[in-house]
Each structure stands twice: as C-alpha cells, then as structure tokens.
Figure 1 (cartoon, helix red, strand yellow):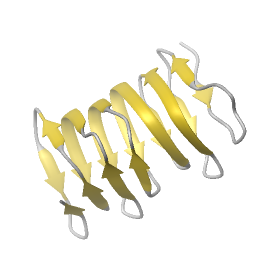
Figure 2 (figure 1 turned 180 degrees about the vertical axis):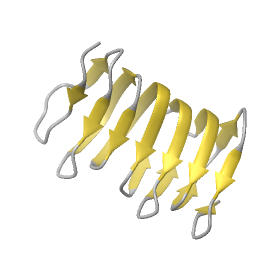
Figure 3 (figure 1 turned 120 degrees about the vertical axis):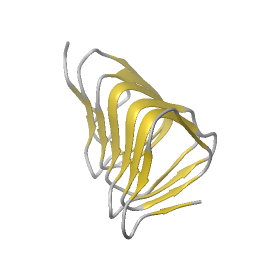
Amino acid sequence: MADVEIRPGSRKLTVRTLGNVRVPAATVLSNLSIVCQNMEVNGRVSGSFRCTGTLDFNTSVCVEGSISAGKLVVDRSAEVELAVGAAAESVEVYGSLKGRVQCKGVMHIYRGGSFE
C-alpha cells in the first residue's frame, strides 16, 4: 500500500496502488492510467483515473480519459472539463465542472460553484 507522488518529468504513465497518489503543481503529464485509493491533483494531468476513495482536483484541467471515483471533488480555484465523463458515488463542486457526470448518490454544488 505505497503512496505515489508523480513528479515533473516522470516517465511513469501507469500507476496501480492501494495507496494514495499526489500530483504536485509543477507537473504536466498526459496519457496517464492511474488506479488508487485517493488522488490529489495540483498539476495538469490527463488520462484515465480510477479511485476507490476521493479524487480531488485543486487546479484547472481538461481530462481526456474516463474517471471513476468514490467521491469527486472540484475545489474552489479549479475549473475541470471532462471530455469523456465521470462516474462517482458522490460529487462536491466548489469551483467549475463541465462535462457528463454519472453520480450514484448526491451531487453538491456549493456557493460559487458551477456545473454545466
């Protein structure tokens, strides 16, 4: 259950862990395939993400792959565009979320947040 930090210049495009994944702010990567417990995105990444726990976007990004998460969170400063779409048990939107979302539970759009 190792935690993974994807750093700028990383060549690791596939990550499978029972731990957490963190993407720092200076990171710009595409074509990622990530399976993990929780994922915190501060950099610009694109690919397919499957998180059994929380997928938290803290920055603006266009995700070109599929997303599956227990909880999808778009923070206040983030603008997230989903080219393919996302499936989640619950969704919390504090910033801006664009795209198709299949939510099995509750979707909260908080004050200042938007969903298109």
